[in-house]
Every structure is written in C-alpha cells, then in structure tokens.
Length: 249
Ligand code: PGA
Image 1: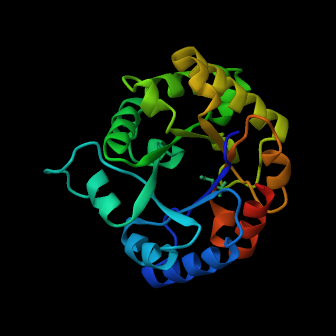
Image 2 (image 1 turned 90 degrees about the horizontal axis):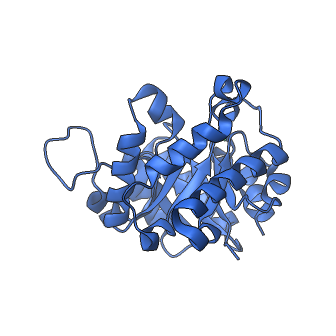
C-alpha cells in the first residue's frame, strides 16, 4: 500500500511572516492527518515555516534545487543548504519552471539526481500541454519526460522519487482533468516506470496536480493510480487544504 501524499505548492505567494502563519494554521488542521503532508513555500520563507512545523505532521518542501553542491551559480540553492534549513522534499521541473525559466528534461534529471544524492525526496513534475493533448500525444509526452527524468538513477533511488502528473492546461485554470483522465495518465506513468524498474513501479507514488480542490479531491484521490495531490491555489487556504488532507484518508 502506498501512503498518500498531499503537498502544497505555494509558488511565489506569501511573505515570510504570512508563510509562517499559514504553516501554523495548516499544522494545526493536519494534526490527525493519515497521509504525508508537505508545504512548499518560497526559499526565503523556509526557515520560518520549518520553525512552525517542527514536531508536527507537516514536512517542508522547496520549489527547486540546483544540481551542484556549491559554486558560482548566482541565485541557486544546493541540497545541503535546503536540508540544513529543514527541507525534506523538493519540487523539480514544475511546468512554470519549464515554461518561464528554461528548465529542460536534462536539467530536471540533473536536479533529481542532486536531490537524491543530497537526501531530499524529489517531486518530479510532468504533464502535457493543451495542444499535446489535443494532438493525441499525451502518453508520448509524459513517457518521454518520465524516462528522461530517471536517466542514470538506480532502482534503490528510483523508488524514493515522487512523480506529480500535472496537465499544464489544468494548472491554475480551474479546469481539472476528470478523475478518469488523471488516473489513466498516472497509470501510463506507472507502466513507464515499470518498463524501467520492474516492480518498483508499485512503490513509486504518483500525485495528480492541476486545480485539485476541496470539491474534487475525494474523487481524484479514490482512483487506484493517484497517490496524492500537488496543490497550488487551494493549498493557500487552510480550510480547503485540510479538506483535501482529510480526503486522502
Ligand atoms: P493549481 O496548481 O492547484 O493552482 O492548479 C497546481 C500546481 O501548479 O502545482
């Protein structure tokens, strides 16, 4: 049985004090959570959020990690820096980073390896655009992204990786994939991992993301291949996020 994991991607929202307050509110509501709960604030908010969530059911995630341990990489953060600040998970290859910040399948792979080497759990995002879906290449697109993300990663590390299937057309748009569409692609992703690593695919957790909210989470999370959610907008509202956590029981 795969333990469900609900992660909030706060994106570029909340100042450090606001983030600390939000983390405290979520930690209180998640006191009885039966799934893993993660919040991913901006880097500058991590120490304050880590302080508020220490000793609670809520773990801290980052929104990116660099692939080198240190050096002349202005604006980047290493796995060791994040770990020392209390981070356990890191989102890699979010479609917004692919779209606006030049993230590629190759850098996603490098960051995934660096996260694993540094003891962080990667949440690797994959997903098709609207035109890819309309042109019938959803499966091909996510299979390619998954295969390239796992290049050079051994079986023991592969089972630690979390995949977030996020159809780009559903992110922040209020348009959710139907539970059947989401489950179908999560199943395709699991088969692809199976081609690479055999049985390990049964251990890898696959989240759905893209306008998951308090109203649709239960149905999405009831599907056999959906092991959790990566939530943007609704993760900024503690009551809504709490309902999603509850739906993951
Ligand atoms: P959304 O974002 O829930 O606001 O659609 C999801 C994400 O981008 O991870």
